[in-house]
Length: 132
Image (cartoon, rainbow, N blue to C red; front, side, top):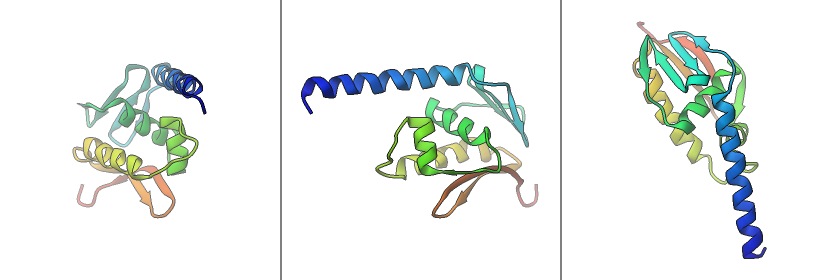
């Protein structure tokens, strides 16, 4: 691959990323589950009435999971939806973002939302915490 075609490929991928990010801003209605409220058009998340500050990728990951509650989302599917990757070199990127997302959303919530399905991916459902 020549240097020119490599740069063109990078430019195309960057433009696709921007389009996906704009699509998040123009996304569907508010999602409410448990004590979590996601407002895609405002890039806003609240847990038990308190604002939660997320990075854009964390927000996109939460939105990808919350759009399909109860459904198994493979790491590959999440990588494709959030990062636009067709092939994921390492699942660590997703695992790190999931960890941050859990800390931001679940630490102050009466619910656990993101369940790990070992060897497969993640599932989004509101499960009351023990003793809550």
